Image (cartoon, rainbow, N blue to C red; front, side, top):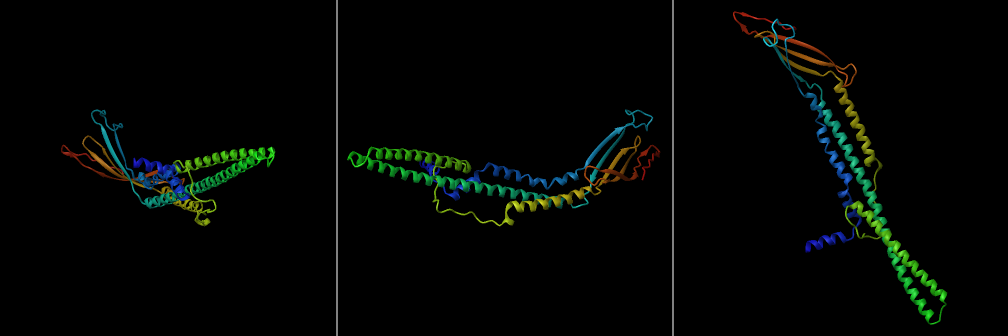
Length: 308
């Protein structure tokens, strides 16, 4: 019972400017969405690791080197290639992502400032409509007193019927103005309620006590700082792309069957030739060294020499 009364009281009690801004910041769906989107930067700094993914290959066939068929004398091969990280891709990737994350954080701050300004305008608009409602109520009270006074004078023969009609018309006008002021105030409260995320039935404060927002230095505004960080992030990404455009080295180990019972292996070093200075246009050249594995075959040894 007490809990229900407390909830009812909290929803029907008036709201001040500070509480309205805090409630709006906590409720705003757009700010919540931006905060969730910001979490994506936590993994973006690690995307450079995909460059280090190894590759494995398996080959088999006859290739016409054996007089026997594939079923009797198949040739097998397996390869393992591993890129080598020669450049500070990790450091630059983290720095670029950190700049982008900070810039995105300033977008959230800009969204908060815009929401604060909107709540500020909506709150004082409701406070202004509340003051107009109070004036309309006093005007109606005065019009009723004036009407009863003129009516009494008319009954005593102290005034004309025209003055009575005029007082009655002013009373009806005061009632109409009061209804219009009440509707305007309710609409202003609904507009404020849509921002703070709960029903507001009253606003607290006085229109004479207009509170100023905190003064801002243009250089410290989120808009200006956002562009500065965005420029820094672009510069870091340019440096990162230049590193990707440099020759990238990989080491490959290839093992293959060269005869019935003979196996050999090759160690290859490959590098990209970035003629077009971009990640998409890579040409490869390969250098290798070979070593013979000798496996006894009867009384002799089959020798296969790999190219150097």
